Image 1 (cartoon, helix red, strand yellow):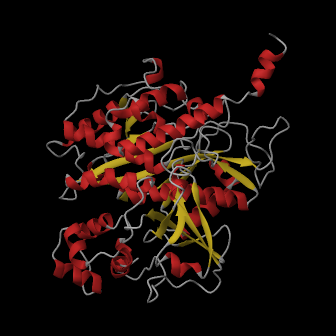
Image 2 (cartoon, one colour):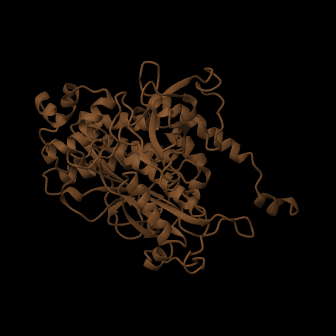
Amino acid sequence: MNLSEYLTVSGLSISKFAEMVGVSQASMGRYASGKRVPRPAILRRITAASDGAVQANDFFEAESEPPPRPGGAPVLDAEVTAIDMLICDMCGMPRGKRLDRSGLAKLYGAGVGMPGSTYALDVRGDNVDGLDVGMTDGDPDSMCRPIAGTLAPVPWIGPARVQVLTGMHDAEGRPHYLDPRQVLNRVAQRFSELGLRAVMAIELEFYLLDAKLDSEGRPQPAASPRSGLRPRDNQVYSMDDLDDTAGVIDAMAAAARAQSIPATVASSEFAPGQFEINSAHQDGPLVAADHGFLLKRAIKGVARAAGLEASFMAKPFAEQSGNGLHIHISLLGRDDGNIFDESRPDGDEKLRNAIAGLQVMMAESMAIFAPNANSYRRLRPDAYAPMTEHWAFDNRTVSLRIPPGSGLSRRIEHRTAGADANPYLVTAAVLAGVHHGLTQGLEPSEPITGNSYHQFSPTLPGHWLDSLRAFNGATLLPTYLGAEYCRIYSLCKWHEFNAFNARITPTEYDWYLRNL
């Protein structure tokens, strides 16, 4: 989306946006009119201030979105018959409405109504008793409005369908307080106040599964479309595995490109049928989280179109690796330099401060990083899923890894969250920890070497019950995510916990029905 279109859609004036970017009103006017291209440092600030809606290429010939109509709605291709209007709920699931073509003008105008309680549904899609939204307040509508730069085709459906990410707003135009994207935005604003910008990327692991269950009703890795054989070995980084599923994996990459999601690397992982797709680092946490959320939808959609299932469940197979969601983060200062750069006088100090904050807040954030009953089956020894708050240089057995790299590339990899977690809330919790460490000048433990599983007993909550209790007792996280949001999140997760534990499992019948 070019700068002029962004200002029109967002309702920002040239003077206000110039203030946000830190340039003069006259300069911003020239950038918006196309009379001048900003220099690289200002391009990065424009991208950050627009939450990634305006990219560097938008100042040249590339166009990321159809041109707007007089009323503000973009022009759709003639083949388009429907628009998927998406929101992200508390569990990280896409919900929304499918509009016919004529609904586009309303969406880009007054907006399209949906109950605000949709954000607070549990993982089964049920309303949760005891909340202030839903039946309690009569379940009123809020207005969904599009997020600039997210209108995109849906390649796995075909040219008749497009999608757009939206956020709900109240009657005064304020973002809905239960929108996970706005929770992240509130945390991100704290870095702006420090003159810092977060550069982030999300890595997602998933299993490619057969649409049919096995003879015992369990999931099974998808058979190769080429050989017809089902993978059974842990061929990590196997090029043959990538070749065997090339049609599907390539279609996932193509769908990401069509939706302007910068998916850059695909690899086979530590279990049969497990893969990882990474997205490029983004100057701005909102756009990085958008990419994580939308990439999951694209991967699942392409898999279903191929007659398969893609699962981001944290631990589908008891004896195989779990699925993780890893966050990479560095911070740029006002000079556009990486504050973690070891060549800076305080680069190592800032890195250690950030690590310390992440360590301090990790336990109370586990209900965000591991939000479901199955999440805790992933956290076990020698499974590349962390069980303590330790950190190290280029070591995948710890929670906080410092990958190889220097200068702008020096960063923290946060490895605690599962792929079943909400990418907006995970990103918000990670940023909260980094901010807390920086502003308080905290000092971390010393970095470890070797296999952390063989040196330390678990210190993080290893069970859903323990993490929910830690979340309820949190003192720092609510100051970032919001006390009311944390209260509602807790109620929803306790509701799920109680419903899950009320079920009698087949294992209980096997162990107890006749033996006791």
